[in-house]
Length: 619
Image 1: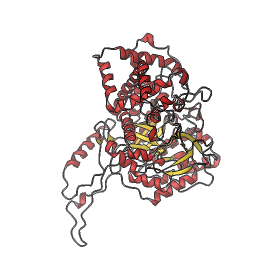
Image 2: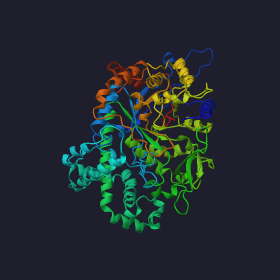
Image 3: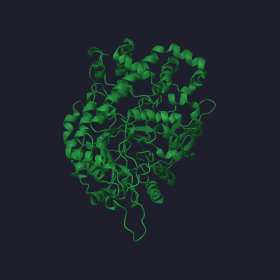
Image 4: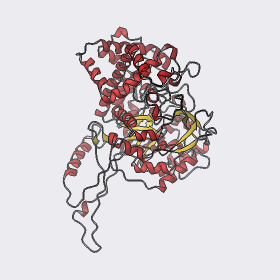
């Protein structure tokens, strides 16, 4: 959570640097072009006493941006027949539920292959924020039933349905499901090349933007599965492998053809299922918001294959690692351990790796949130051998140069980010320079004994160019948070926001989010279900036992239609209903068509607005 002093710094910074007007709306990823443009038409300036320009009475300010609402839920939290949420029929049922609830956003956590347990060190890890490759997908969420429909498996190949209720046991899922997915991948590989599915796989694998990362990712996975290297970080591999000796890599590739092909086929199956789900969601008026940690895992194909882009020592180990400094909640700070970027090296290569990473993310999602955005302005560097983050120091980041560097590849991309923590003036200045919204979290507005009337998280201090959350996946559920507050705080909530036991804190905060001036508000599914902390997704600083929550058994969403109707009513009350597209009411949709046609008509008195690419998102 954000320390009150940090909240004050964040809000003070927004006052020091005026917010820039928003110039572009969300980009339509299907066409690659902006959906709409917002620009204030400037008037000619006649002299005092002269008549106004023609068309003066039609020169109105631009209307507010469309207001949206949505839900955060990772696919692993969906119902499923085989121990984990997957990309099968329950995912489609959730999209239908979102559309019924008039929710226009589905936000997910990183889709990457999660960090695996390390025997003797971490027995139950599975964090999506410590993935082994920033470009690949988590094959554990592949739908087994969909593989049967594709003819790659038979019903006899599937395990007996298990763990259809309760939290995910990732170790169990990996043990039972991965061999089945491997069988489907090998069945795909065995198809003749003129088979439609096999041809699609071969074409996908040859796409330059895919082969660019898949070649190294598949070899990295094959080396990791070498029996004598199991559980070892890549910098502890034999020198010829960790230093990427060309002859050694080619020899390993030749010895691992079957493993490499299986890996690639499984990744294709993930892509196929996820992109089909994405197309269905878009057709229902739902935008998929992804999540990209700014840093990548140390033991990852990304660092191994791009060593010159990271701060590594002569032994290929990180020379400095990421973290955050001590604060009121952690006297030692937080030592994340991710290797830091060599930003000068990225600059010299024209940010090509980053452009590829963002391009891949924007293929899988409509919008992408970048975690810890503040590191683009300045990042906290801790010596790699430090035991705590106390000895770290702030280092200047790439700033606006980074966004200019990737503009030719992904300019105008709907980048979503996060600005919680120590937010200094340079962070806000960068956010404004790329015209990106901010982020407010309702739980951070209360709970401090002294209170902070300037907190940006208090609803009366919200601003339009922001995304509002009651809490994120890293917070307690709102009901759990409320239960842990003292009576003074509960009285404040009652007086300020009308929060009472009858409505409940979870739905009280959903109402506050809907009512906020923030242009978007997003709720965890746990809050929609008014769950206590038994539904918490992650507790920062604790490696084990996270990420496992599931919403319920198959058929859950049919029984949650009451919550959908309740969300839809609030969305309509607070004007968060789509004005165009699949979710728009018939009258609004017709009006939107008329308005669009009117905008194409020339305006004789209005000069053409200067076009400018912007990076969109929430900070």
